[in-house]
Length: 242
Ligand code: NAP
Image 1 (tube, rainbow, N blue to C red):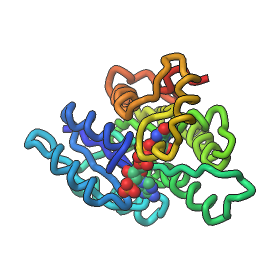
Image 2 (image 1 turned 180 degrees about the vertical axis):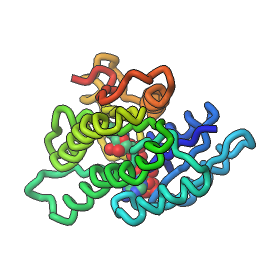
Image 3 (image 1 turned 45 degrees about the horizontal axis):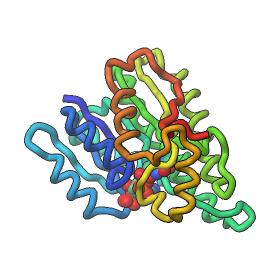
Image 4 (image 1 turned 45 degrees about the vertical axis):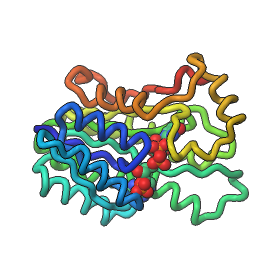
């Protein structure tokens, strides 16, 4: 049975990804930072006798905790077939108003965290000669977003990281791809006013805001055997935002 480790799976897009993999027969690790109750409730719900779901707390921005997260996953399930680097935080303010602590914290979570977790996961994937890694970037990583400068930089870094690491590990039969979601309805976007949401919605070709399941469907596909010849790709799930 395959195992998927999903970072930041206690809510939002990560939760939808965990649900999708569990529903399709994967054991899942639901990584979380603060939302212990939500993560454990989700794990209990997904534990249906056919698959096993486990909630593990770890701050992915701390290399020691990232290492322990992967170690615990391997101790419980023996292998990691799929890693989804989803955990992330947002920050909406002018760069000149942003403190160095805020910059460091965001970069640790959004850019260094996925690098740490991937680094720890790769040895077991390499020895299995099999692995699928899906990184969650953002449309702002492609285009840059005003008032989202540090966030955009972190997500642009994820795109470059995806392309580079896919070249390092392709010969080990490991696929690494990246999803750039547009505006998706989660806690992260709950601070947007109705007016701002409407403006963004009107900038999409499909005329709607996305749902976490829109992203989960692509993450699942990229981890499937149907996507075996796709690697180093960056794919938008943004309703045609422009
Ligand atoms: P969300 O609803 O705010 O959920 C964020 C998740 O990340 C939570 O499970 C949270 O865990 C976890 N997390 C945060 N910091 C962490 C850390 N240091 N270590 C481990 N887990 C951590 O966010 P979302 O909207 O689902 O976003 C998921 C990903 O998609 C992020 O990378 C985000 O940048 C990206 N994205 C989102 C949108 C959007 O419109 N929503 C658009 C583009 C890209 P706790 O709850 O336990 O704190």
